[in-house]
Structures are given as C-alpha cells and as structure tokens.
Length: 103
Image 1 (cartoon, one colour):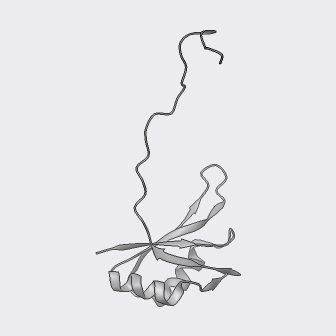
Image 2: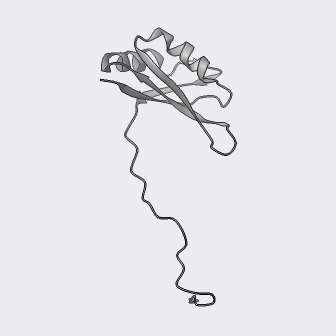
Image 3: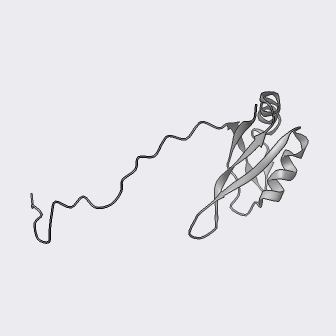
C-alpha cells in the first residue's frame, strides 16, 4: 500500500529534483512534490514523497528525519490526512445596501 510522507523544513530554494535525489536511497519512491504558493510559484517550505510500502516509509523516516538538505534539517513523517474544508465563503451580508446593523 502506498504511503505518503510529509517533508517539512525544506529550503525555499530546493527544487523537486534535489529532494528526489536525496530520497533515491529509499526503495520504492513513486512521487516527489514540493508545495508552492499558487500566486507566486514560490516554495512553501514543505512537500510530500510517496513510497510503495509501509516498510519504505519507515526506512525513510529512520534514515532521513533530521537529515540536512540545502542547509536545513528536514522533518520526515507519515502524512496525516488533510481535514475536509468547509464550503461556502462569500459574503455574510444581511440584506441590501445600507441594511446592516451597527452594534
């Protein structure tokens, strides 16, 4: 079963290829992703690596948690499922123009 690992502490200048190179010592790496800001394209300092098995995930944590990459200590751990986002958004208007109450 595929395991997704959270990789924290990345330098904002680390490219995905560099992260893939570091994880090359782990068997069964399936994908490497660095999360970027949707507006600027700048790295957000974390990413995800998917590995083929639980054993590979545990191996990656044992070998690479705390490892140095581009001058930063990495945090490698099993990714937790993201919390569902509530829909909605929009305005909390109470009606037409000038119809709001003032407390």
